[in-house]
Structures are given as structure tokens and as C-alpha cells.
Amino acid sequence: MSSVSLQSRRSAARSRAIERRELVRGLLFISPAIVGFVIFTIFPIISSLYYSFTDYNVLQSPAWVGVSNYVALFKDSLFSLSLRNTLFMVVFGLPIHLVFDLLMALLLNTKIRGLSAYRTVFYLPSITPIVATAVLWLWLFNAQYGLLNTVVSGLGFRTIGWLTDPKMTKPSLIFMGMWYGGNTILIYLASLQDVPSELLEAAELDGAGSVSRILNVVLPMISPVIFYTLVINLIGYFQYFTEAWVMTASRSGSAGGPANSLMFYAMYLYQNAFQFFRMGYASAQAWILFVIVLAATAVLFRSSGWVYYRSAK
Amino acid sequence: MAVESSLSRLRGLRSSRSRRTKQAKAFAYIVCTIIGIMYIFPFYWMVITALKTDVQIFKWPPDLIPLTPVWSNFIEATRYIPFWRYMGNTVVICTLAVIGTVISCVLTAYGFSRVNWRGRDVVFAVYLSTIMLPGQVTMIPLYIVFRNLGWVGTIKPLVVPTFFGSAFYVFLLRQFMMTIPVELTDAALIDGANEAQTLWSVILPLLKPAISTVALFTFLGNYRDFLGPLIYLTEQKQWTISLGLQMFKNMYGAQWQLMMAASALTMLPTVVLFFFTQRTFIEGITMTGIKS
Image (tube, rainbow over all chains, first blue to last red; front, side, top):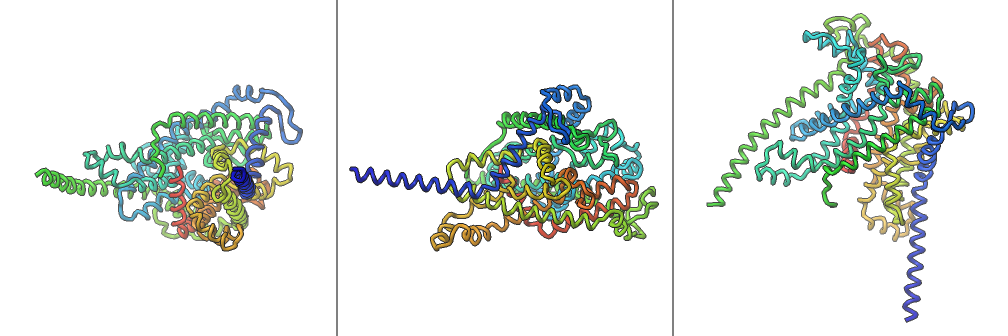
């Protein structure tokens, strides 16, 4: 009796020792990530919250001002304009791009010959440097000599102020964005190719037409991927910066386009932080963005009932 | 009887299906080709603009084939800005970032997949959630830290953080490592290899495709980055090609033929890289897609 319990106690002690050793080993291997997580994520999140309650110009030490940065932001008309411009991209640009990318992926998934050539064509624009892309599109959008207005006037229509008419500027950037959705197209295509063909055949035998097969079989099967691209691109759109900055920034550092119609959230934040050195004010902007993104993602996750998860393989 | 009728129904279905798929395919070809041409055309427009004189680019209707291509525009574009120096700076940053990312992410992914420690999966979930954190939230405090360290105006703020892991790449590598059977590493350990040797000689060779994907995406991500260099590279001689191109645009914005030449030269390395590594790219994206 006692020898048995001693034995089991001994083996329990041994397994505890093993567990401890495994813990140390595991933490040792992930130590770069732990250090990175603390220094480059946790610490900055907390200190930017602190800075958001201070007046801080980098040269002098931060002075506590309470919520006055937040109060000032709510009265700052350029801030609310930058938020509205950004929401425009999220509300219109995001769904337009994802639907377009999905349609392209569905077309490419019809087992057409020369698929790899088409894939290359649609993917290529998405890997070119954004600054070069933006410079190229500045030229395409050029009011007098650009490609787009050449086509428009060649067809006998009145030329369009793509980047000069404040009403057109954001739709123009959404249009441009359709050019480099290749990454999402390929993600969708890969997941479409993963849909089991037995399912499609079964649906067809049951008399489902191609539209109904797409709506009732294909889309539910790839809905986790759609959800993933929705979340990632939503967060990306809230940080929309480089294209608009390159296309509107002048030598003196001002940016935003005609009537500030292309002043996006991240641009105004950048200006406050690194041009005007209002670090406290910009930190408050950053935290408002953080809360908005968290809330938007939470809404997406809450309403993700349409996402169908296959039982784990 | 019943069998026969259902068989004939099946046959009918097949023939109508083949007719319908043919129509669908033709439709897909036409639409994909038209949109494909629209995708390629901006590149073409860029190249023919780069081959024109400053008078020819303002001609109406525009020449679609430059009859007397001005190749010297490309040479001139690399003289207006120190193009090769910016390119060199960019490649240095990209290479260091690839080294840092691969080393730190392989080690971290190993700790998250090949070692069984209590709380591992919870810690991993928390770590993975940092993917969704907007960069703006950490941007300002990090700038202040790097400024106090005297690193603003050097490439350190762009390179050093890469040696401390990146959640997305850790995720990709971890997914891959989980598919390697435990028996393989156990066998090596029983043969007397220590853990470092096992990681080096068993895991790494099997991990090659995943590592090349991570290396490729890291290189490309840093080559395309604009905001990081804009904040930290305050000295003109350290600029990356993206920063240089943006400044080129601000200074010589009306000389479209030179700007298009400079843009084309900036895009060229990524296009070449893509053509040499297509399979790695496609596999990498497939991995991303399967994740969710």
C-alpha cells in the first residue's frame, strides 16, 4: 500500500518537474517574442494612453492636462472631417473591393486555361511599391493629359476632375484600389479551390443552378476566409495613409487634397505628431482610433453568425 | 426501369451541364481578358510615357507606340535623385529585416508548437491578437523611445524590432511546424542529438518552403514600406527608394516622363522578384487563406 502511494507520489513529482522544465524551455524559445511584445506592444499602448492626457512637444517633459486633448479633438473640425473621410472609405471602399475581388476569384475559378497567366496579371499590381503606384496613378488621373481623361474625352464625354473635384477624389481612390486587390483575389481563389467538388456535384444533382450553388454551397464554405479578409481590410482601411499622402503631399509638407477631401485619419494624426509635434493630441487621436477599430471588429465578430465553420478535420 | 430513367436523367444533366460550363467558361474568358488588359494597361502607359520627350507626353491624341523611344530618360531619372544610393539603402534595410524576422520567428514558432508547456495556447492567442492592433497606437511612444536612444535618423528603429518576432509570421511558421511529425524529432533526440541540433538539422530543412515565404514577404513588406522610413529616416542620405521617389515627385512633379521612368525602375525589382519566386508567393498566399 504505502509503497504504491510513494511510487505515485514520486511519479507525480517527476511529472511536475517535467512540466516545469517544459515551461522554461517553451518560454526560452519564445523569449524574443515576449521581449518584443512587452517593449513594442504593451508598453507603447499604455504610454500612449498616458500621453493622450498630457501636453507634450517632445522637447519639454509631458504636462498633465486631463481630458482636454479629447475635448479639443471633438471641437476640431479637421479631425471630424478626417474621420468622415476615413469612414467613407470603410463604408464604400471596403465592400466594393471585397465584392469585386470575390467576383474575380469566382471567374478565375471556372477552370479556365492559362490560369497562371491571369493570376500573375491580377496579382502584379498588388506587390509594386505603393509610392510608385501612387505616382503612376497621379499621372493616369491627370486632368488634361492623363490616360483616364484621354479615354473619357475620346468617347465624347466631359473630362472628370478625378483628383481636383472634392466630390470625386475619394471615389477615384476607391477606383484605384480595385487595381491592387490581387492579394485578396488570390486568397479567395485558394479557398475556392478548396471547396470539395462532391458537395457541388451533390447540389447539382439536387437541381441547384449555378447561382444557387454559389450562394448556398460555395459562399458558406469560404465564409471563414471572407470574414478574415473583412476584418483585416477593415483595420487596414482605418489606417489608410500612403496612397493619399503621396498623392496630395506638397513640398512644404501640407497634405489633404482639394478642400481636404483626402485628409484621412492617419494623415492628420501623422501631421499632429511629426509635423506639429503635438504628441499628446496625436496620442488622443490614436486612442480614439484604437477604440473605434476595437468596436468595429467587435461588431463584426458579434454579427458573424453567417460564418460557417467546417467541423475540425 | 427506375434505374434506366434515372440514368437517362443523369445523362441529360451531364450534356446540359457541359453546354452550360462551356458558356460559363467563355464568359469567364471574355471578362477576365478585358479586365486583365485593364490591369496591364497602366503599366504599359507608364513605360511608354517614360520613353517619350516632354513635348510628346502632352500630344493629343497620344501615341500608343513611341516611335522614337527616349531611353535616356531612365538614365536621367537616376541622376535627378541619387537613385542607386536609395536602392542600396533599401536593400540593406530589407536584408537585415529578413534576417531578424526569420531568426526570431522560427525560434518563437518552435516554442509555440514543438514544446508543450502549460498555458501555451492561451499565450499564443493573446500574442496573435496583436495582428489587429493599429500601428498608430504604438507609433508615438516608440518614436519617443527611439528618439531618447538617439536612434532617430538611423535605420535602427526599422531593423531592430524585427529581431523580436512578428505575430503573423510566427503564426505561419507555427502552422507549418505543427505538421512535422513528433516521431522525427524524437528519433533525432534518441540518437543523441541535442535540441539545437534537432532544430537545425531536422526541423529547418523541412521548414524551408515556409521560411522562404516569410523571407519573401518580409523583404517585400520592407521594400514597400513608406510610413516607417518617413518617420525615422530624417537624413536624406539614408532614404529608401520609396521616400526618394516621393521627394522626386514633390520637386519635379511636372516632368512626367522622368517620374514614370523612376517609378518603373522602383517597381522593377519587385516584378523581377515575383517572376523568380512565383511559386513561393502563391503558396504563401494559400497558407494565409487556409489560416482562418
